Amino acid sequence: MFRRRFLVLGLILVLPLAAAVGCATNPVSGKREFSLVSGAQEEQIGRDGYQAVVSEFGLYEDAALTAYVNSVGQKLASASHLPNLDWHFTVVDDAAVNAFAMPGGYIYITRGILAHLNSEAQLAGVLGHEIGHVTARHSAQRITQQQLAGLGLGLASAFSEGFRRYSGAAETALGLMFLKYGREDEHQSDQLGIDYMSKAGFDPREVPSTYSLLKRIGEKGGERLPTFLSTHPDPGDRETRTAALARTAAAGKTGLQIGERAYLQRLEGLVFGRDPRQGYFEGERYYHPQLQFQISFPSGWKTQDTRSAVLAAEPNQRASMQLTLASAGDRSPSGFVDELLRTGKISDANGRSETIGGYPAWVGRLTVTDQNNAQTVLAAAFIRKAGDQMFQILGRSATPGDAYEERVIQSARSLRALTEAARLNVRPDRIRVISVTTTGSFESVVRAAGAQALSLEETAILNNADPDEDARRGQSLKIVVPGRAR
Image (cartoon, rainbow, N blue to C red; front, side):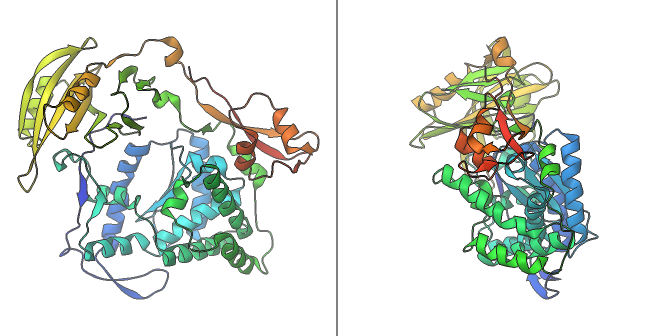
């Protein structure tokens, strides 16, 4: 799933307190509140964080869909407490059911949640909620609370700050994605989102069904909640509460838009689920069709494929490793290591040049020294592919030189070019929108649509429908057409 970018190894950040202490006026309440983050810093976090988010998740490459989402977002932003802020609405190429906000007016929504929404008003509800987090300065408040508690803000690192790649503001932005909002923040953002969408002409009575949908996704997945619900925890009975808020907001208003059919038509061809073109596992073997390589990870280790890295860890946490990709310019693998030494990203290197999978490589150990002079020894392999691409494989074991470290090196030496046509030409599953021609049971209509990637229950959840209900003539429904995994 990862693209070319530099290694994420350390993202711990504490903003300089002296530069930020003060009071700021909350745009929603109009009250002065103590804050360690100024308005200018909020904008910097959002601006710098944009490139970091794009690097981590990737943009979903559909200009028409992106423009549509932005148009809905801009209508809502114009009705918000900060209509003159430079708002940005971005569709990220992630299968997770999620949306999130960064300070400074940067709103992100995944293709995963877009696939599950069923109307323009539901889209407006999700975007309005995220806009509310920005206008109420919830992120700034969370940063302040974290720093006052002396905890810092960021992503935990298994390796070293020596390989930090983003600015402090960008790292703060990424760190915000992994912290939960509190009960009062969620209450307020629900209220603000419903107010904004009703003022912008969208029917807020579509919001409760969105939370019903998210709950069904969570129940289907067992204990694993949709990402949106894990980072936006439900402060009570959300469906009941938002239904009451929506009735109040809609009272006396006419012409509020739902936009079901118009929204669904925008989803035609949307990639659904994991995109195998960006990497996939079969057992311990990992294949990446776009980058045209394959590699085996240690047997029995837990693995995770993200857009920025492929990770593996021994089940008892005795060792871990990650594979990333960097731009090396015209440097050889040994020259790349020399550059790391020269720039102080590592303090020592001990290894040799060799050939892996027909590619020039450097294999050995690196030593990284942090600001407290603590040293970390990493097993390392740098493999230069075509162009300026440099594969970076770093591993850490409890004892340098032990059997776990050797498994990391063995894994690195298994990297090969991917040439098998069937694996190179994989295709993802995609949304297809069908029109019901004759009223009948949901099950009969769906089954008549041909081969599909989802079960009947999953398709019902996708449409927020009851599998036992009737599908009406003229109704639009979403199904998922299977791609080709191999």
